Image (cartoon, rainbow, N blue to C red; front, side):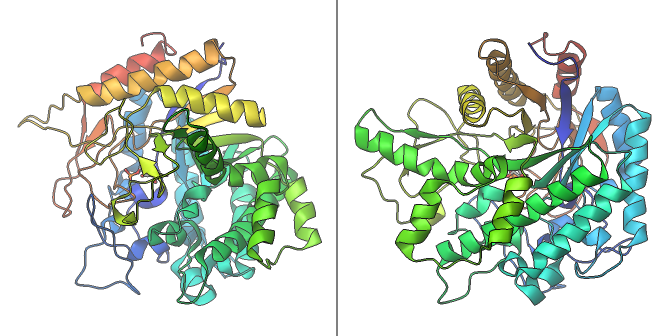
Length: 477
Ligand code: BG6
């Protein structure tokens, strides 16, 4: 049975909706130097801000100036919770300061007060792809152990300041994206890391992963001291990997590939490195900076719940090797092949609601911790008429099928699910492409890929549909 306090909500990330990138004392973050791309066209990471280029996250949907009216709309939608992140560079503009930026802290105080006024529970990610740029450029991001200390300071500042306003926290968003070392945006946004010539990306990955897992554990330990009622989770991107066939080679290929999904939560949840990882470090001769003290901290700083995003699944076939990595959709692997049973979105993301039930079961069986679906959704182009009516039936269909799968996992399989927050409930800038036209929201924002538009908000058909889902606690599905 679903919990009484089931958290129906909506999800955002500071950099994808706030805008105000240089206001209120905020410093530039790693995303502020990312240009716009498109499906199949990578976003560029520039050295600094190039005045001749367009950076879509600088203004995003300007929630920074619209937060009151946006939260009012979300209250009308009936949200029980609101997931977003705190932009690290609003609080510590360069990242290595000793004292935080009061104006940045005030912005989130105001935002939380507004949410609480409507009875909406904030669910906060500490780091969602927005490390201060200075930490990336000057320290090499999480390649450098010093950044663990800076993150811990940032986390403590947030916990202390908002301890009476926020109960649910997550440390790093989709921390496992960077397992895909072939696409530079994942290392960059997860960890502020650029792989240099001559470096082994896998070795860099495991060192960075260790420092980040350590930073997460330290934050959990600090948070528990500050408020023992906090619930602090990890956050992973979960794209389940199916074997292409019952050929044992395919089964084993999928099993091994799934370690890419499980490596981070294995440590976050259990507090120690899994045997397959230790064997890999040995086999490859990686000398990693992992101390005995670090291992004790990992053990102590395990998480209370698992937050995860679910958008799609993928399939692997043992005897395939796609050399052209550029054609590989997010979450896919060099031995991925299309799934003949399911269709994909216009951005090539396979649509697989049953995969959500499968994911909930696999994660719950493995970890026995409450699960929180903190992202799910359908990125699509919306057709808008002259009166700004948007009949987004495919989105309604995607979301209802996924909610159905979640309810089945809860009611029939007994999985403990804390809540469901569909991604970008008000349209936001896409992370992977920087586009506006890849929309997820039940609320439309009049802004296009080039930054034109009135910024006005309009309810789509999915608004009323989701409003009913929440008010009926899922039974209208
Ligand atoms: C997740 C991220 O990867 O998926 C979000 O946590 C992101 O930041 C979302 O926006 C959807 O991806 P995209 O590229 O369609 O915006």
